[in-house]
Image (cartoon, rainbow, N blue to C red; front, side, top):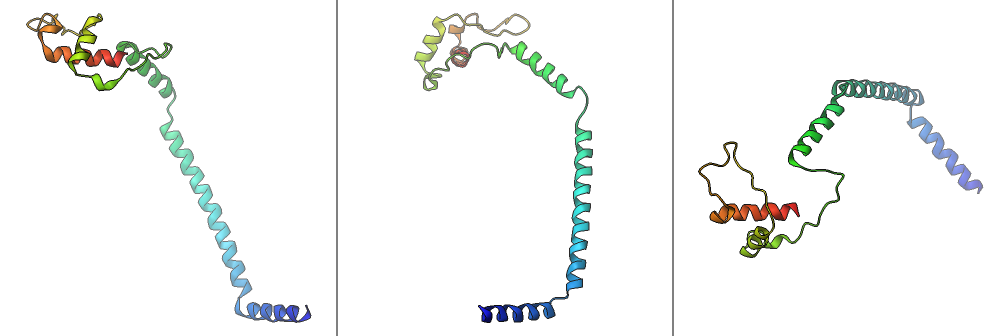
Length: 138
């Protein structure tokens, strides 16, 4: 045990001669000052960015616009979501027949759809599109 203590004492004396303690102390104090300065700058910049990005009423206006759009397209989050069904049948003749048996709403142009096909069964592309929309509604 005494030999281990003697070797430790010698190693400590060699390290004390190799290291300039005042220089290390000065470097540590400078590091601490720079670290504090960096933290303050980061906090100030973060607050400035938060203030610049945060406008009063922005969140309320965003919610109002989103709700208006959802109301226009007929989505209500208060309702329970229906089952989506199997997507593999989209666009197949069986899916078109299945969807045409249920009542469907077809969007018309502002002029009342003049000049276009009078029923969905007249235009196969329209029938397919209608079937896809009905599958999405389910």
